[in-house]
Length: 353
Figure 1 (cartoon, helix red, strand yellow):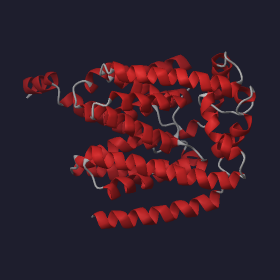
Figure 2 (tube, one colour):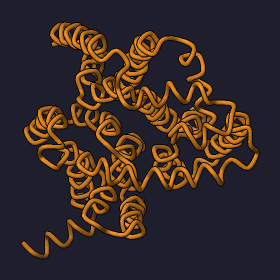
Figure 3 (cartoon, one colour):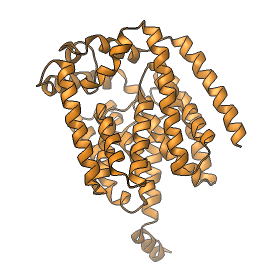
Figure 4 (cartoon, one colour):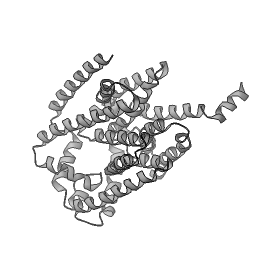
């Protein structure tokens, strides 16, 4: 089995190399990031770059801006592969799975390919989320807080993990994350050349969010983005996402720390007000966990998730992103299965039968 997984990794890496050579940095998001590297350190990072992450994160892109766009892209692809493999290495230790298998699952997961083609950085998000899981499970609050704090470069992905640290009362980890937040404020002030950068940043973010929801509605995978594409007001869509996340709190406290930390990234994507296909990479921890508890139902679910992922390519034609099925369906299944294990549910079942 492990030998087959290694062969699979080699095949997938070859496919990634071919795809990267074909794209050569022409992905829409990579061009935005490359441009952000040119504007970092000036107010234009907030007004003209379409950069929606914490402004300080654009400093990482500054070296790439001084390279030809294709050259920088090839380096980026290599780095994203390394981040995915690093996440797989942590997963191998956390879930007791062969490294070749966790690596194959990471690189062969459709959202990883989406990220590579677009020039997105979701493999970094995957690594930091997995590192947070490691810190939570191993009772290493400094690691959990640092990983979550670094993830604040993309706040929408960090919220669910911060929520987990809060309900688990990992106050030391929360403190480390708060220090990271202060650090992000300082480096962002330098990036925007403005100590009051949050105000124009939030204005730009709101403007781009409204247009993004309209232009990319077919790629929606979360509950709020699904509701927004159906015409729901932003307050209703965002409120539904918040209710989903908050409503899972009692269930997260019923299960082991490993399970709670593993499913939170998945729930976070399902509840996110801004989640497109590449964000589904955060379903990987749940897929890794599912493999450790494999049975007929879980095997079918995992295989179906991998089979559905390529349909992302036809989201415009179908007016639906098939990755919404494993994200929303996986979240619903976890909620249902956890409720089934609760004493109240079992007592009710006994009364009914």
